[in-house]
Length: 265
Image 1 (tube, rainbow, N blue to C red):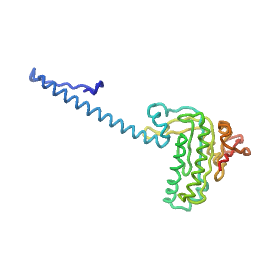
Image 2: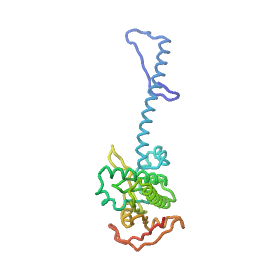
Image 3: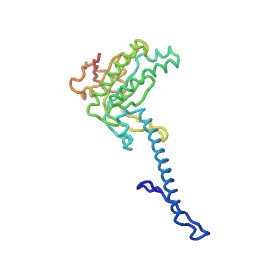
Image 4: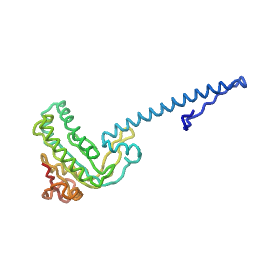
């Protein structure tokens, strides 16, 4: 059973009751049969492989930008757990809890389905990893699984684009008027990789950096982008106009945080 130079297996045929039963034409028939069988087996194996790869790619598209998927598929250890520096972006809808309490469940779903896709597309456009949705919140990271020298710039540009997109979505009446988001960005060390069970894996970043991004998001008010000092330090000089804020104490940190507001509008 051979396809090109690839040997898939062998066929053995015997007749224990009649010696010298087989002749040259029987060998030719068997060879032709083996060729067809090998092609069929190879095609079935290829189709199975392509189907598995399609499922893998669809799963990866939930988290990663299209530009990263080929590299992830080709390298099996890319999503293995490792420690790295990452910039986490936490985005939340202002007043969502109070607003959703006045809406039906279907209305809430319709709102989130209008809100999340444009925000996810912005994350992927700036080659970030969309880690998860948490109710109305979105967590994205830059630096895992692939790092860029300008990850801080990418994260802040994404945050600015999210604010602009939010303004455009409400102006176009795709979202309720007056709806706003607030965003926190933080840079630090995380452990990044696939976590979960054998049947359900999710790419995640674990560490204080993502928790603090959520706390910084809580400091930001409607339409604001607030970043920590490490993110500000990593930004390209002059790329953004920043305003220093008074040191802020947040839950889980013993020392006040030095934060900056990104002036985007």
